[in-house]
Length: 472
Image (cartoon, helix red, strand yellow):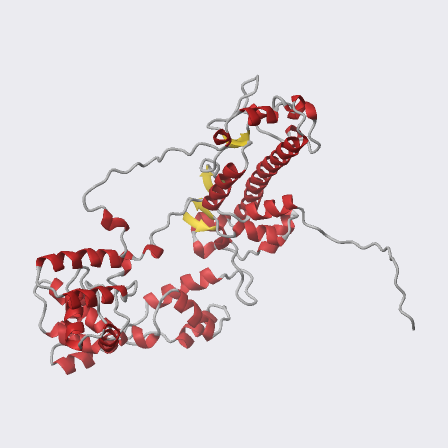
């Protein structure tokens, strides 16, 4: 059969996501801090967008809120007139929004460098003082500097004395002396090679430290397992003395360098919405106070008809279109968050009244069907967002709790709440096993597997029955 070449015309249906829709989807899933960053970036990229401190008011004094009619899709010349004239007339620097002055301009304070320094910087600063104030040889200083560079974020040395000696071509005695110097630095316990050494380096910080406490460090595994009787026999002391020393060990820091770990600094959560109770009803308020109020710069809407530069007209039209789409996407995000939370509040009113044990099974699909949205839209609303309620601050995802097996009204949070109660009332000499706990739920009419009990227990950070057992 011969191959023929020619043109073929055919029709097919194909869904194409417009750039406007892509932007709307992206903005929908942003948390409040991320949305602020996004808007600030747009302020830099688009000279026609400006921040307004207050809402503009109309002739009747009402707040002016741009609607779709205010931004026709076909940009009329009479509406766009004069946009470019000011752009061409003004200096280029005036296109950018001036950066706001810092609200918390700090004052230099002696020692404030410690707040932002890394663990290595803090240790090196101390090492320099030691070098100037003692007879520290160059080799010892270089070795100590090398050791500091090989301390992990928790404060532990990750290389051996042998490796230090071989790398720097020094004797192991010099390497050991350098390590001893580092281990004398603040914070106590830094430079240790294991947990026992870390705690031993901190014993001097305990007032009137019992002499047997150092010996007990060799029995940390038994202590973690709760075998107090075994430790008392090994140390030839009473069980009560073991308990007292165990409490003293809690005063020590097993990760002395973690306070300097800049990757784990406290991050503050700004809620995307607030649920307030007024009378007997709950109302949803979407947080807009932390979002910059933006609009299209009116100065650039004056002289478009006076310009003949078609390239500049296309540029302005593109930037105006981008600004309009940004405003619409932000408003769409606000309206969708409001509608989803309104529907959630109606479903989870008992949770708001009574707490986690009253949380009802709820899926994103149910809310999506009720609001005629796609399930992925509800998922984006819930993603990485928080809501302030009368019961505290919660992730929006917390409201979507699946049911346990065939139990329509039993959620994982209900199981966890009961699990805490069962374990808190157990006999410490004979704690409940996971199977015992599963049978206790069975007696309440809740069918739940032992492995599920173990999973929830681990999520609650409750140790196994063998570790919870206490000896008399």
